Length: 328
Image (tube, rainbow, N blue to C red; front, side):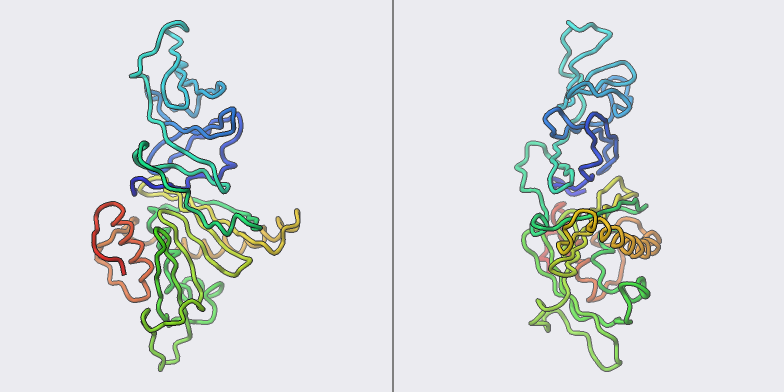
């Protein structure tokens, strides 16, 4: 995991009023709940007394009571009541579990992974989607590290092979580019795939001066992806790391051409059917990749069409302090 980053970890609707939600994200077992003011609290899902899961306990206002011995933890993780010691007995500060900074925004719950005292940047999102767009979504777990799931959506070469009967129709196997650009921690990549006629040579990235006219996708570090299908249609994926071997994918279909209640749900329903089919075509191949976690150097023989993947690996390694070279 990359330190000091905002990770999208849950759809906001998954944390219900008056209920505790237990999940594993970023290799951490967490319990989340909504406080009385509507904000989200998040602490380690492990009682500091005997290690029981707090998400199986009771929500008491803005606090959580352990199901085992009733230790009451507040939103900072501190125990404020040990029933066996009596209500009037002060509780030592050593009775405490780790707390996490979480923010609800854009229909997503974001977890700050890293130093709680570090300066926190703005929540990363594709801001154009906050205006006039509505979305529908589905989620599913893939048994791979989140890096593999991310790289699948950065792969511009696989479409005519994995998706030959869906979004890869046309046998456009020859790849021009792709051109990769960065704006701070956001990568945009442009690609032009065509049918291989046996004569055309693929253009290198620096041979595509008019690359802006071609199809483009974006990836926002550390775990947010956008397919810019048109001005009115986008697909967004949030790759929420569960642990080293599993990833929760939230796939959202955004559109601005049908805002009418009811009709927009119908549009979203059919779009999700199609998107689920495409995603499952990807899944069938990605789960076979070894190792299930990708690294900057791992013995693969990459090609020019893999430029977005290589850029992702280098930027990730750079943010982890493992790479100091120039990203091309």
